[in-house]
Amino acid sequence: MEAEGCRYQFRVALLGDAAVGKTSLLRSYVAGAPGAPEPEPEPEPTVGAECYRRALQLRAGPRVKLQLWDTAGQERFRDSWWGARCR
Image 1 (tube, rainbow, N blue to C red):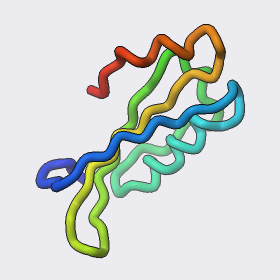
Image 2 (spheres, one colour):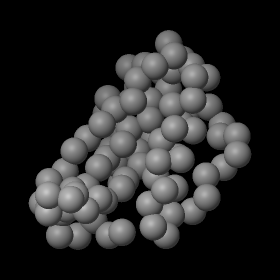
Image 3 (cartoon, rainbow, N blue to C red):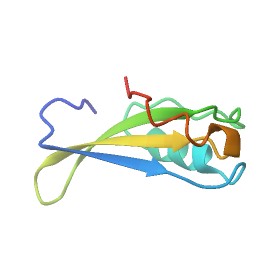
Image 4 (cartoon, rainbow, N blue to C red):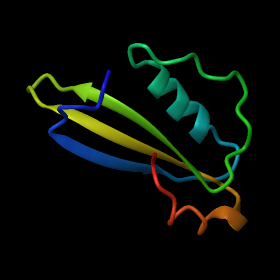
């Protein structure tokens, strides 16, 4: 689903400890979107942050765009994602 024509945009950052499944959760959610590729079975650890996108058509009518941020759980990378951009 294309993000064109979206009335609202929401940014969601997923925070948590290392190796608890943040990346797997986001990839599974995004893969549920029509036309999305199948997620990798075992993703590599996230360094800094990764951004995923998904557009939704709400029942109430408007289309919304989600920017879903997957952050690294390791302590040494916690501050490095603040300057990242979702491309």
